[in-house]
Each structure stands twice: as structure tokens, then as C-alpha cells.
Image (tube, rainbow, N blue to C red; front, side, top):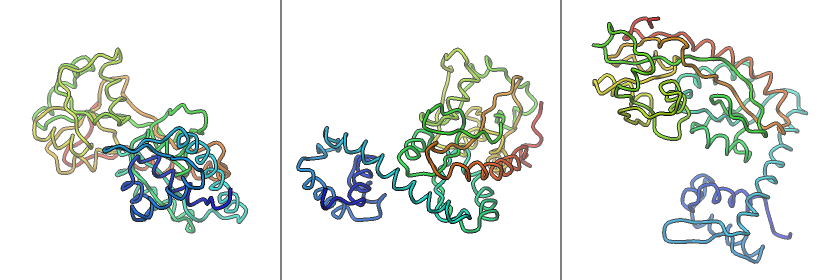
Length: 310
């Protein structure tokens, strides 16, 4: 089709992803009017509208839905051509877009970037933090090269590479430090602080507390592990956090930290990438660097909380 460009497709996919002209334009680094012009040009080339606009939201038309699916495949194939060229040059360099979930990013990402930069000095590492479902969507659409998440993700298009297992620990007010560690049944009767819906760590914690899927008596939500730990410090309730977060999150909080009864709740942290990516062999090599960095973050202790008790 004469006049159709990759720019048209990239801008349209941003609009499809965000469902809002302003947010899509911001993601593309252009003005909203400039994005609107590109979408109108694309509609003129196709001869039909791609969106249905209302006062509050933008929905894709039937043509828009079909185009989004095809454009995703086209842009992914173009990105893979770039990866093929990078592989042919020998050394691993250029842009590397890594997505990381919020319950891992603050604790692992700084050391990870330092390690990768040491092993692959020509890499331009571009990290992004988001919840699992967003990372997997962006990975599938070619917006990311790798994602560091809790496994399994169980999607046939992705390869999963386990890095390490990590336990969850119980965070309680400092006044409760000498009390017996509650079992899962007892935790269900306590005021439990957990992350908001959408965080996989929330589901993992609830699974430990209530394998049968029953709800807790009192459940309070927070937007981050920092918020949860500070609420515990204020005496509002108790929470679970991954062990890698202990040192950072409890440093300025009046809390106690304890291991939970066996079998200790845990998660498997790993990386995922598209099976179709030409970079897959290099990502497998990179996994060992990430694995070593992850192991280095395990077993840290908070001076404020003291040793983690068994």
C-alpha cells in the first residue's frame, strides 16, 4: 500500500495499547495533535475509521482490531530483523529493553544493571517497571526484549528461564517480636496487609495464607511493599514480603521479621523472552549473570529487624 509506513503502525499500536490519544502521544514522545494527524492519515490510506470515539474513551473499530493484530506481527518481525543484525555483528550491544515487576525491581535492578554493564559494555539497558500482565503484553508485542517476573507465566509464545527461588517472610510490629509465629490459619484471622489487585505477589501471599481460596477476615491493600511495611510499623497489621526486600524495606521501620512455618512460602524468580527472538541464544548466556546477581541479593538481613527467626 503506497504511503503506509512503520511510523503509522507504531503510532497506531500505541493508541491501541493505551486507548487514549494523550497517553499514546506521551508514550511515543510526540504531541497529541501530531499523533492524531498520523492516525487520520492511516485511516485515509485504509479508507475506513480505525476507532470509535466517545466522551470518555476510544475503542478500536472492527478494522482497527484486525489491523492491531496484523500490525503487532509486522512490528515484531521488524524488531527481530534488527536483532538478527546485532547477532551477526558478534558482540552483544545496542538497546536491551528489560521489564521488571515492582516486587523485584527496587531490590534487584540496580545490581543487575551494574553486572550486565560489566559483562556487556556495549549494551544500552532500558529498564521498565510494571505488573506482570503489562510486561507480558509488551513482551508479546515486541515492546520489551526480556521480562523478569515470578514463574510460571505459562504462555506458549514465551521461553521461561528460572533464576532462583526466594522465600516470603512475615513482617510484624516490633512489639510482636517475641510472640509465636502464626501459621497460615492464624494469619487468616489477623489484619493482613497486601498489595493491590494486579500484583502477582498478592496472589502468591494469599495462596499461602488460604490454599482453599477463602478470604481473610480483614484485608487492607497498599500500592507498594514500602507502604505495607510502614503500615505494619504503625501497628495497623501484618504483611508478607519477599526476602530480597527485607534489608531495604525494614531499615527505617519499627518492625520484626520472622520466617513462616514449613513449608516456607516462596516464589521462583525468572526471565522470559519470546521463543521467536533471534537473541534467544544470547539471552540464555545472559541468564547466568542474572542468576548470580539474584543469589547475591538473597539472605540479606535488616539491622532494624534483627535476624530472621526459624
